[in-house]
Length: 362
Image (cartoon, rainbow, N blue to C red; front, side, top):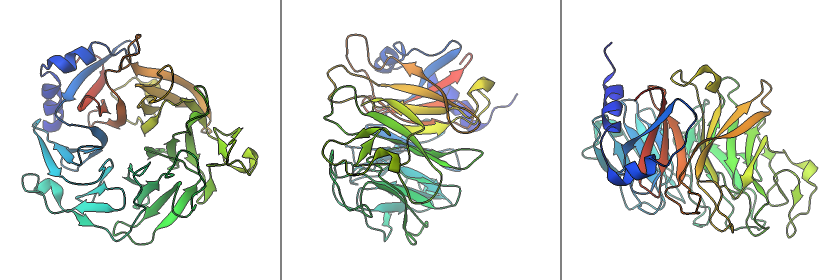
């Protein structure tokens, strides 16, 4: 059977030997029948991922200030630089949208200019300049609008709810901006259910309430303007000791608690057929890992199964091993993304790598 060029390139690239990456790959534990391989280890600070129409994988970064393109040939190139925390990337109508803390920039017709990228064009919509929770995951929704989160500029505080701790959306040209959800401390990942088209997002809980609370949250939006509780309430039932002024019952509770300080980031519904059928429409969530917990937690990819009504059925660990039993960190998963052939890609900003997980033989 003749394979599509992109699929052939992904399979070939995954077999390239890299000693440092091999050491990490050997540590990763997966359910029986699954295999993990390396797509690239040439993407420094790899964060959010997005596919272009012609098979280019675009990857944002944190400290590097650069945006990368991983081509079907395996070549990695820079398509933007000198941006402030360009974590988020989103592809729409041939253009690449990139988040840069206080604004979003666009690289027009990017896949036809990978060797000579256009100058980033800033959209008119302006966002706060604070870098604390200022980096942004961005994505286009089924409604054709660009969704942009604005995190709280603090661990715990009560900022202007119209400008901070919310999730916004706007037209592709930056017009028509509105707040979709309030009380969102810091979401660095969201996606849409393939059937209901509801938006689902992770939210990172506050620090300094101890090792074991609060949990990070998995939430879904049922209507525009919902409030998910920050700064009054955490994980649906913990009033904040400093800012809790309203009962937790007044806010939308999470669908699932993801664990304390796991730093749940990117998530995607699995809609492919390469994995066994029981994985269809499951959520995969990248856990970046705790930064100040006395015993580290996270550093893995979780699997969430849902009931037909959207309630939680089961949460389990899908991929782990980036954190060893001695507490040493070997990598930090950031985002997950389905490849055209149904494999699951995982970005790792510590290793500067993109991994590929598939079912069956490579």
